[in-house]
Length: 89
Image (tube, rainbow, N blue to C red; front, side, top):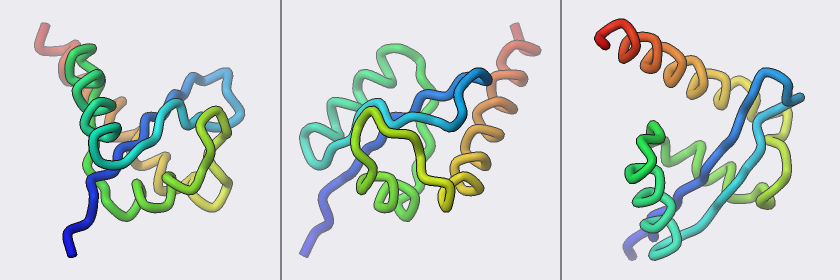
């Protein structure tokens, strides 16, 4: 059995208590989330296990504390990526 693709979009700003799930979906909805991210130059991180866990969080809700560490790694990776891109320009 083939697993359907999942996508979760997160938003985080330093003023937030925790990252917020802004979109979540499977199959065609996941494809659309990824397309929108690509169109808007939003970094994409592929992590099936984290996507599986975050797919249980309702859109508009904050990431649960037990997932902070995993999400922090993603945010740190994207922050480093942003810094490298800015240095290149």
